[in-house]
Length: 177
Image 1 (cartoon, rainbow, N blue to C red):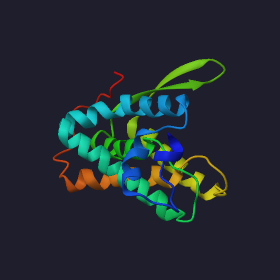
Image 2: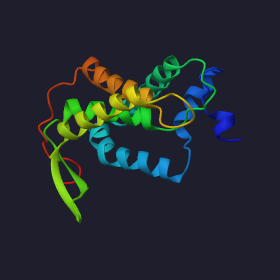
Image 3: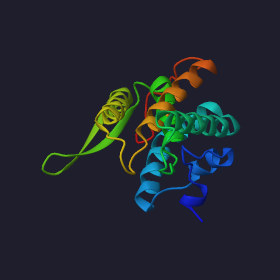
């Protein structure tokens, strides 16, 4: 049981695996990394949408991300797992709703330094990194589902606009301030 049973294999799609694959992870670091992004960015989006809409938003972004990944290589036999596609949707929503919020980054300049940077800069850099990673990826072997990240991010942006983002959120402080 586990990844082989519930992970989504693009060349062998079962509808239930689209859902279950979002809740499986390839290891503890995979899970911890995804939960860190969810913790940092998710609470503001949940506050903005409300609990039920947030859950629907999260699942829909995850489904969109998974399908984009599947369409990027329909013959792949490598299972895709993880919440990163859905969380990428949260990042896209955060870019639209909180572009001027500041987030704290731990950066290594010989010593660990904390920088406060606008969310828009961090998230645009993150998205460009995902896109460049797709371009340099060979597609061989397991790894990161770059297309899922890109698909989830774009889905998050589009859904926020479709929901009528109301107005840009007045709150300009990020979750770390």
